[in-house]
Image 1 (tube, rainbow, N blue to C red):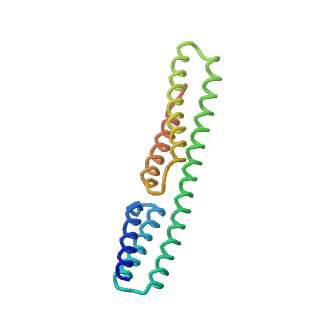
Image 2 (image 1 turned 135 degrees about the vertical axis):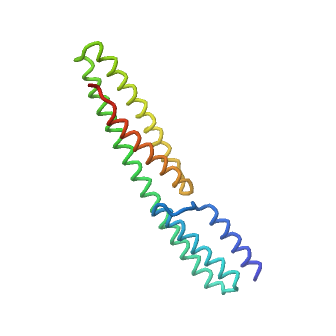
Image 3 (image 1 turned 90 degrees about the horizontal axis):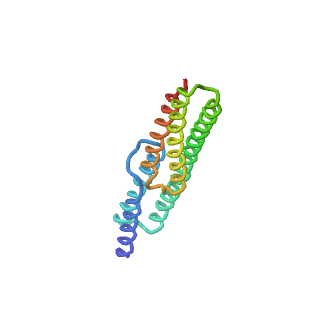
Length: 165
């Protein structure tokens, strides 16, 4: 009986190691809640609690994991929307500049073409990040989220800075 509890406790500890660490976002706070509830399961198992009590506490952990998965998917979907909106803004600006190319002097065309090329580079970075979001996992989400937010912020700033005048 004690061997089964020890195996259960070790398995639980291993599962905890796969969760992200930190409490910066609501997703990370949910991960911390899971770790705390998982520790309660381990403590109960080590203290010799009956199997029904351990199972009940494990059910709470499982419920928290479902909430965690739902939360990080929501954040990932929001990141997709942000990136898609930024790509749309870039496409609009590129289209505007390309229409303007025929109406400006040769001196201005060079500047305008540089602006278009810069925007296309940023657009490609955003498109790549959008693809990467499809393959991210809950464990890597905090890192991916930080990178995505930084890229969207920098791209938006660059988008506003690129001028054709």
